[in-house]
Amino acid sequence: MHVITHDRRARADLSALLAAEREDRYGRLHDCWDTLDKQQQRLEGILNLAFRNSTYYANLAINTDFSLCGGRAVFNRLPLLTRSLYATNLADLKVAVPHLCYQDHTSGTSGAPIEVFRDSKSLFLESQRFADILQYYAADSECATLRPLTIIYVSHYQTSDEHIYADPVLGASVLKIRCDIGNVYDRAEKYGFFLQQHRYVLTGTVSSLLYLANTGSARLDLPTPALILPSGEALPPAVRGLLQGTLGAPVFELYTLRECGTLAFQCRCGKALHVQDDWFILEALDRNGHAVPDGVAGELVVTDLGNQHVPLLRYATGDFGSIHWGRCACGLHLSSLSELTGRRPVQFVAGNGDLIDTAHFAKALDRLPILWYRVTQYLTGDVGLEYRSLVQEPADGLIELCEELQCALGLDRPITARLVTIDEALLQGKTGGFFSEL
Ligand SMILES: [Zn+2]
Image (tube, rainbow, N blue to C red; front, side, top):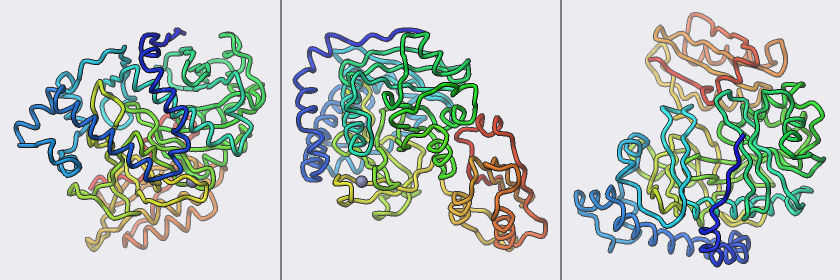
């Protein structure tokens, strides 16, 4: 366990900016023009900074004849920053900044782990945004306005460290703790945190929260949290239901990347996630890099308007989803993200050579009480399903679904289904979904 201390100088330097955000940002999220105005101002700021101070972008401007005079049109023509380009050019991407920097790495569940750098300003602004998210959920829960607030981040990965951070902007203690060692309640108490009913927020990856919900010894004596905020992996309805039913609190999904923090948070009235458009530009693109129409699924590409240390302009996340604009029933007027998944949509090959879209079958599987699944089409053309359901017997509807897929593919042999243990499923994390070896 180590203690992370905040950057006092940055806090002092940024106090006016943070106070302004605290004052008017929450209201801004209800007015799309106000939000888009901020987005545009910040985009101009980060483009200026990147092209003037980042060697990578300065070289890009020279080699591709970009000029900042083009404004938004320039932005839309910027080549995507892929994960491999990011990893290769990290030293050139970096810009010297006045405040402390934080270094981390991605988990590696969707490719090799990459180094991540953010400065104190970016982290403090992230805390302010998190405070706004809690304020938003407070309308439907007992949390958020409670003080002192404790955030418990659980992890069941053996490689995870534990830390304590007193967040001065959020006004909360953040405790990252292992949930696979003893029980969370005692472990938190050991570090001086006495968890009480509805007085803390529980967060972590979907797999870690599922581990906690499914392991009686880990959640022994654990009081009901005020909120549960899973992120980092797909959240099937069955998992959402299990978390809510076992841990006893409302569940709201976050879309979070280690590289830039929480991009979007679930609507409190529905399943879509609201994008924090004043600090991020989220695009959905087709295979050719063109924007897809509103509501159509595409690869998600993000621009972080807050991280000045490593400007992320049009960063290809490797995630997929659809985006649409409009005022929501909850009152927010932001873009909304739906059908979020960490995998490119996959097509299977039928016996006659036709390509079969698996999205229909993915939706059907999501409606079953299944916690995790992987459907693979092998080189032979045969298909195998591995899954973990909430019940020991094959879930009702699973056999019919396999038969429907077999029929759609025109396969002679049936689809093999294998029930995996909960431990196997929890170790898989992001590796669920549809895969083709063809
Ligand atoms: Zn909403």
